[in-house]
View 1 (cartoon, rainbow, N blue to C red):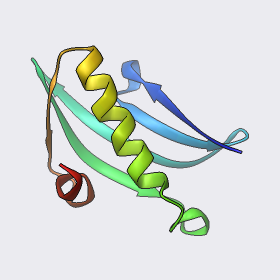
View 2 (view 1 turned 45 degrees about the vertical axis):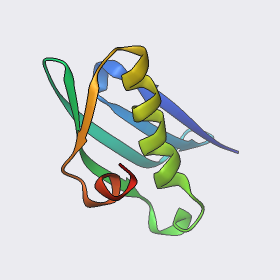
View 3 (view 1 turned 90 degrees about the vertical axis):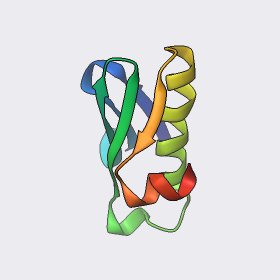
Length: 80
């Protein structure tokens, strides 16, 4: 089962299949803004909506931490 984990200290959300890391979405934190700059999912797991869940996890957590979201990452930019 695929699990999405938010790691604020590492400035990312990560997708895990058991203990295998299969995707991540990274952001840069500058004051009150989180800039999503990279989203990637392993080729074997593409087409399952994992990238969307990774970006959504960062967006949801930005609200909890009262941060604005912008995106350099082309995938995340389309979602915003």
